[in-house]
Image 1: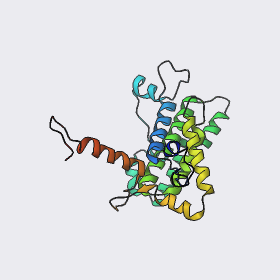
Image 2: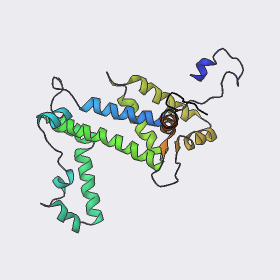
Image 3: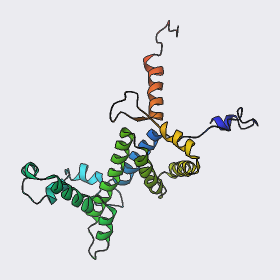
Length: 232
């Protein structure tokens, strides 16, 4: 918007030629959430049936089955946890991920002569939901590298038909621009993409979310009200 408003200015300062566009990570998070919900919720008249949220929650009234209960090898998960070592826990977690959260598991199911569409769709949802969880936790941790990894995946997913191609274009433009930045500008960009006002662990938030909070305080909390309202 700034560049558009100053498009007739020829000077580098007046024309805002030195401005650096920044993709809002909070808005990217909302887009990723909407992407996952739109893809997997479904509808009663959906042509893509079996394994949709709508069927599980509204029609069948079903609950999730814990993957650890399926692959821990014990009848009682709570009893298994009491005696399991760290290595055993990690091994079961890896099995759960490989069989219920990975694209490789879906590809293996699709290669079978008699396919289980419900299980395929469930695994795809688990995978996509895990992308969102990874993004959210990476933001809170302040780990920009993990954030970029998820953005690259979402960029491809958002190019699918009837999704969000404009968001995909914005992410692509951002990632390419970052790659072409000089090292110092790239570091400056990364170091100012998230903020932590408290200094506490897992206290980072996107800059555009901080801006939304400031708008809330300015418009709602500090907004003068009543017949004699005055900013003074």
